[in-house]
Image (cartoon, rainbow, N blue to C red; front, side, top):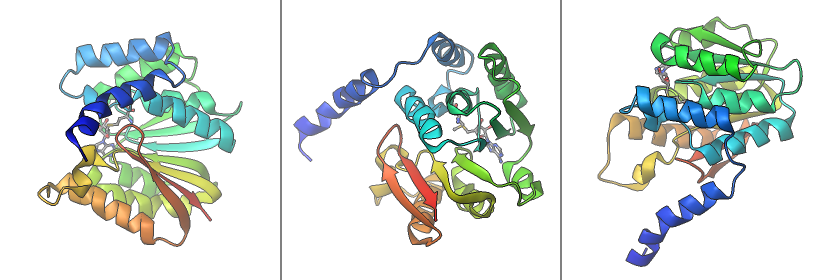
Length: 219
Ligand SMILES: C[S@@+](CC[C@H](N)C(=O)[O-])C[C@H]1O[C@@H](n2cnc3c(N)ncnc32)[C@H](O)[C@@H]1O
């Protein structure tokens, strides 16, 4: 890749973001408050254009039951819940009371506090305690990168045939292709992408939106 192309990438990213459905006032306030309260952690929030993409995916797929692993201050859950059909539900799993207390305020403000149920506790415990039925229509994985493969193994049997699984940060700032980069979270993402790729229960594609979304459909 040339230097010129490198320097164009941030401009292209801005262009992509500017040409997606814009976040409304609630999402903008949530992003602003997250940045103000948690300046060292707000990078964890999904990108606004990714939020628009996820709302669309929920709408297009007609999902009624969603599970999210890793909610932080609630941005991605809010985007997905907005795409749900009437009567739909989203189970949000996280370990942080502090971060999810912000999420709960914004879910309430968006009129989604009856739609989204928060489950505090390690997500693997929460998933393992869930019955196999009724199955979910869509799962979003966005917690510990080292645990992505384990989340996957618990989630795939709990998703209905034709249902979707999405995982965030699957390009990990481009580090997945950097042979010098061997941090455990990057290794976790590489192992996850490899597992999804060889898993013949699904068909999938790695989408370069935000920090990379691996989107799979259960056969
Ligand atoms: C990348 S952030 C999620 C960002 C969120 N999806 C958004 O759009 O703002 C990761 C979240 O995973 C949560 N987390 C970390 N370890 C976890 C675990 N073992 N079980 C459940 N949640 C966990 C963290 O508390 C954090 O809120």
